[in-house]
Image 1 (spheres, rainbow, N blue to C red):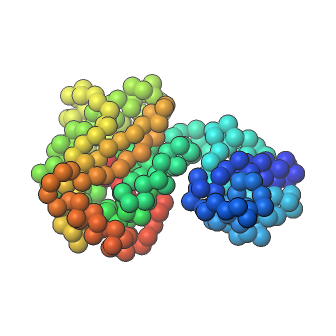
Image 2 (image 1 turned 90 degrees about the horizontal axis):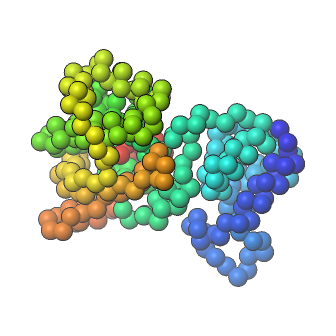
Image 3 (image 1 turned 120 degrees about the vertical axis):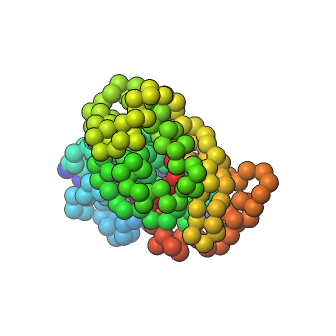
Length: 287
């Protein structure tokens, strides 16, 4: 690990970020450009003393998890993130879309505090979601590998469908499969996608039959009825914004004109995420 270069790089990156960009107030009394050390520590979930040690080149080698947290806090690009791992003497995570949240996606998510929203991968693995999204869907088991994909759980775990209206299950299945075929084509059928498809074909008759129909369509928007345990049925429009390379998506939910969905979303904001334990990372999101 290059302690000196690591600390200097952290300092240079925080200096370029305006506090308002990450939710901190601007003030004429600020003595440093960009973020203060304590603010970066807060964003990264680290103690102020530990972060100070890192910048002052006297801290212990940070873990891979801490390097990832610092990269998110400082809104690093993919190239900058790779450099940070190099300076930390840590191996880069796998290059798949779940390895790093696109800074632009994260920025947009944080600008939607009053709308259920999340960032997911193209294989429907939740990377991060806001409080209202957690309140809307409740917690989900933390899974690894192929089971991290909500598409996989949709076809293998009946409990994953409980928050969807039963009348819409068939439609959702078709949409998931068509979207997965589009992702497979865009990725050139890489090993991660091939592995997911093989598993699904072997364990789900429903998936195998739909896959054989050759339907293909990226899922960009949909209307669905979600079943909330306290608020009942909520009809919502689900919209998607894809990253430039298509590897990640920002999802957000809005109430259609008419009906009572807008009122229920306001009630959801009051209820918060009390039934989800206020979990912000790795929680569920309807696809």
